[in-house]
Length: 119
Image (tube, rainbow, N blue to C red; front, top):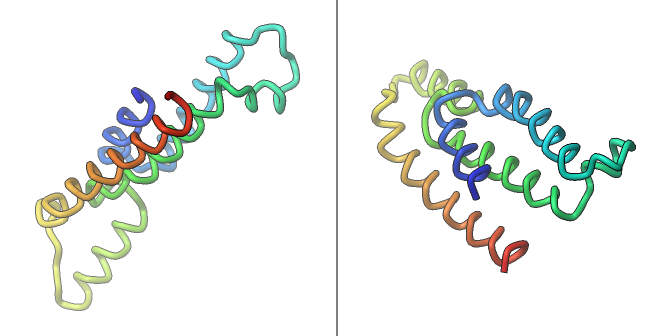
């Protein structure tokens, strides 16, 4: 849950692609620390106790990007297109709608992950 919520909040503040690129080695290192006896990379990152972390990272980073304009590249593009069409969207206008949607979708993802992996 910490990976999910942490990824969501951080992805709202930092573009989600570089965030995931930075987090990927951390999860791999965590897998190595838990399964130091496994040397094969593909086997290591597909361990049953590591799979929920990949899902949490993917869902948190993807959905967290919806929270602010700078959270995802697509947000920046669409805000620029809206500005060019004569409909400027400020950071706070986007935040007012995007952040609650982000929180709701991450909450649903938390419930999904809990039912799928933790119960």
